Image 1 (cartoon, rainbow, N blue to C red):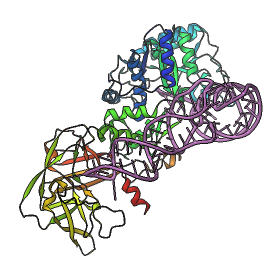
Image 2: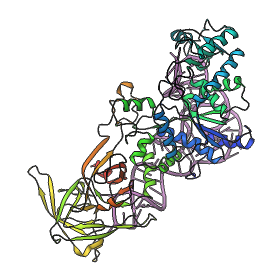
Image 3: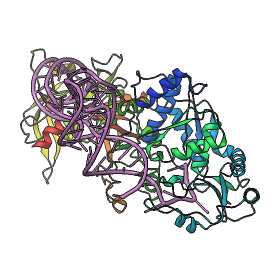
Image 4: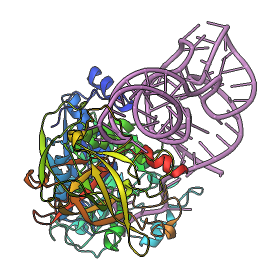
Length: 562
RNA sequence: UGGGGCGUCGCCAAGUGGUAAGGCAGCGGGUUUUGAUCCCGCCAUUCGGAGGUUCGAAUCCUUCCGCCCCAGCCA
């Protein structure tokens, strides 16, 4: 289990845990749980919940279980449990126990018989449609099922035969006997168990009476001795049935459910159903496509778990709708990487420059530190310098506007760690595109300092044309162009996809030193952004770098205003 | 219009009767061989609105307005 990254901010849930731990309210150590359903990959919203649940267990000397709420055989798969386990561990957390609601089926069945004997549950034999009709609406009360008055013996007999597989799906369901006119819809005799003659990924065909969420969730918490059951606000109404069940089944000092608002991020979606559609309908390459808000995607993109934990801490926990600007996530990522990763030179869109006064065939190895002065890390490497180099296309303008500090005809700039160069000649093709620059360098400025104290306005990055390595760059941008793609209506969901969410730059040139770095090294490509080799597609001879996040770019703002 | 939840700076968020923390973003300035980083400064007389209680309210009361969730044999 990870150490806290910083002292956690207080929030209403931590306040409550402090009070409960102090009063000994539960008579047992603090226990939380993270209860995903294995029907999809975890996303950034789950990360917040993971940090909350595991963080509280850690900070209060308690324990947090990983429990799979696998009560629906139609949608669940081992593949997802494997992915979930990996994601939680990668985030830096270790669970006390790994549990499965599907291991509790027998126990939950026993509880069901107990409820039936108490007259608190009954077998309903209405059709699905009749049940729906009988539930009423939010403004009109429901009506009792004709089977509501069945006696204990008949209910017990039916329930056992349901369990034993005598009936087809939908023939009967088990319901709590509460109040069909209850103002809270959830309390109108909620369904507890239903027959599903389907293969379950863990239980196979051995069991056919599946609990529903409301029935399984709170009782699973209670079985595990959870003290604080934390969930998102859409389950607020379900808290009534949660309490009702743990009390009626007879748990002493049962867990208490507390709700907090779920996280939503601008320009993306955080709904498993919608993410599934993006994957299944081929709008992205998979659950770990770096444009996705899933943990697997963030990991593949190159984000570190430290950044995600910092982000979770930054957004906090409250009950207010938490629609968050992506800027906070990006800041967390940059802030983490800034202090950690080496700087290296990479030209994303190369423009050839010939240094006409540099000796043909000469190559110098120049010293270049890996870290700037304010990052307390050591290290440097040699970068080869030669007569022909590449610079960034965007670092040259034939007719520069005011405030453009880079290269232009007649202008002198510094090549980072190398020399001052002056542009003397611009070569264009028939279409007027700049294809090459002829420049001269000043031998006295080796390393980037002018002995005569001369200043230049700009410093640009470069690579040796002869020695640079070819690479592909994958530039990721927001997946949707609308801040709230879900809020625009279901039909517009895909219409709001950002067509430029992935830009591949095939002809980039990176300095040769990276070939010697360990796999998975993260970099800052100076003046461009943070990158790392794609863990799937990058190969020693065929480098592919993912852009983790851009650098802040105040020039872009200036340029945009013009 | 039944029940529930929520409304504090553009975004997130402290504050729980004693006179509005912090982070992000933004703006201005300084340092800088990354227009990055770093540093400094600015950024809510006001807490959804209106009344009321009080010496004193974002915090208590009344009322109004707005947003979100619930009518799956999903979770």
